[in-house]
Length: 120
Image (cartoon, rainbow, N blue to C red):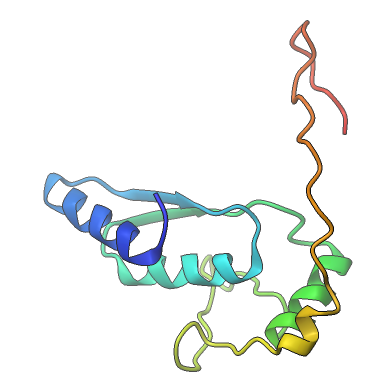
């Protein structure tokens, strides 16, 4: 499922049945902020999965450079939403040029054949 409108429609369809939403996103800065806005807008929101190195200094520096504000942290168990219009930030294309796409790397198998955890 993708896009904020589609998620909102799916959650609205679940609401009369008493279902709650446990949502996730895949460690993307802009998608993460968009996900938090969706969470705040749906009445049957339960929890948000957050993936990635949320305490990494390097990631925090990239976040602040791209977003224009420090990496978001929970306050009293909740993420505060940006207060500016839209998603709450403006991306400067000149900043994005500092972080060119460098391709992807294959995801290593998570487990060995014997079931033990594989290292990366």
